[in-house]
Image (cartoon, rainbow, N blue to C red; front, side, top):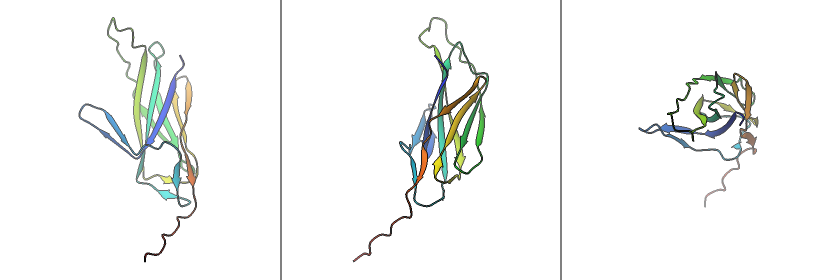
Length: 142
């Protein structure tokens, strides 16, 4: 099986005492903004990368570019997974890694996300940022 990658985009990430990642505010569609640009507090790009045990990654770099902004790059460790003898069911290595983008400026367009590795790159599906126009005013209160 070929190397693969997926991406979740969220507002917050927390880790519990057992190392579980807890994502809050996961975007399941586009990121919609109501002005032509918006300064957000942060975005978490949570990458899920996998490969077969017999084709380990020699290096991994995460890449995210928001519309109109320079790319954010992060090199991540690729520690090999040691499988106990007799456990043949585990045939893949999984790497789950967050890339934090602090105070991003959101503008309409496509978010570019990819995983760069020793044999090439994997373009990952990322949401678009869409502009809905100016916010409407609330009706006057009686």
